[in-house]
Structure formats: structure tokens, C-alpha cells
Length: 334
Image (cartoon, rainbow, N blue to C red; front, side, top):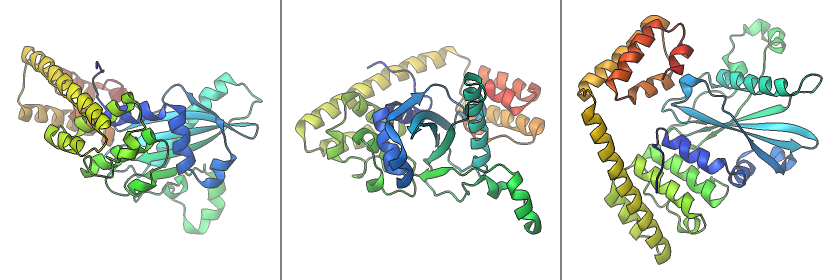
């Protein structure tokens, strides 16, 4: 089962599942406000190409854009998947920048007097703890109390629909079987519950395709490589055909991982090696250089830098941290 290397397994699982319009339709129908869900023409749902995430945040978020109809009007549903360990208190500001890009692309393809479509932003947050951040852009503004009512009409307004996996019980995650299992796996991973009964609901597993089953198992193995626990979990499956198929795929993925590990080991052996302590010092130097040059850096940049193990790459990034004119320029080189 050849597979490209997984750099961001959370994104890969989510995008593989919800790029399928049947899975996306069922997800939105179950997790949007009922009034909106009933108003949409779900048969018109279509996945749009492109991503609108800033380069410096690609290590911590990914997105999917869908178009559909409400009456005779076009609407966009913008799904942003946030999987960094800590929340961003300025998420509404980031979303506003992404929404502007969507409108700009639409405007370029549909000159005036065509009207811009409404965009409904949905944030799916994976973290282990509930957010304290307000989903309203207005709450980020410093408005003097005595003048707030006068100033507020002059400010842009935006509210996003926040879906926090940490707050939603496993049994309330809705959609297709594949969609539910994907959401449950994403919810379970940060809290170390990938082998819990909540994820391994047999009635869901028997209805998904073999490719979907492989994706779930690949995600589990990537997040928790304890093969003995995985096999123990698989042996609890009552359906013998499903148990056999699941065990076979798990074994194939495990052997594939070993082969990939050997290839990586040979590659690392050929490269100029550094100890983990030296690599940590190198990464720290890159981040410190960013602080000196730009004052601060986003959480996504830190997470991306901390995954790099190539000393030559880190050396290049250290020089880039000092020479880059902006954080955006640096992030594009990550």
C-alpha cells in the first residue's frame, strides 16, 4: 500500500474524508444550525479548489471551501481545521483575511455588478481543552464604552461557527460512518483515547470502505505506534471478516512503516548528523532569531520549526530568520 509521507496526519485524514461531498454534506447537516441547514440546497454542494491559509499557519491548520445554493443565491461554506495545541485568541481576525481572499478571487472571476456571495466560516478545533476565545471579531476591538455604539457601525463584523471536538461527546458527532469515525479519531488523539470503545464502534466500521478503514488505521498507528495495543483492540472485534480485514491492513501498514523507517535511517546515516540536543539548540536559535528580528512569531511557525531534523535545513532557516523582511517571507521558506 504505497502512500506519500505523512507530514500533517490530522490534515490528511480530515481532507481525505471531507473532500468527499457525501461526507461533507452529512457533516454540515449535522453540525450547522438547523435553520440554515434546512435552507440550503444540499444537492448543489461542491468542493472548490485552492487553500487560503497563510503559509506560516500551514503546520497548525488546513481548510476546505465548498459552494452551494440557498434559493437562487450562491453561498460558500468555509471549513477551517485548527489542530494546534493552544487556541488563537485572534482567530476571527485570521478568518477575516481568509474570507477577503475568497471574495477577491470571486471578484476577479465575476466583475461588477455581480454581487459577492455570502461566506459562512466554520472552525473545527481539535485541541484537548475547550476554547475561551470569542468567535466574534467585534470582541477583539478596543471600543471606549461611552462611544462604542457610535463607532461599532463603522467596524467590520464577523462571527464564525466554532465546533470544538473537546466539547462534543463522541455520540453527538454526526454524519456518515466515515465522517463520524474521522471526527472521533481526531477527538480521541489529543486525549490518548485512540483505543477506546468510543472510537471502535463496530457498527460504523462494518459500513466503511477498505480505503477509509486504511486511513483510520494509518492515523491511529501514526499517532500511537503501540502495535500490541492496536492488535489487542482489533481482537475485540466480534465480526470475524472485519477483524481479519482490519488485522491484515494493520500488519501491512506496520511493515510499510518498518521499510520507511529503514529508508529514513539509511538517509540519516548518509547525512551530517547531529544529536537531539544539538538539533534542539539549532531550532531554539532559529526561533530566537525570529524574536530578535520580528519581535514574536506565530505558534504554527514554532511547531513547523520543531519538526525539522535536517541540520542543513535549520542552518538555512537561521540565516533566513535574520535576513527575512517579514514573518510571511520566512514562513514561505519553511
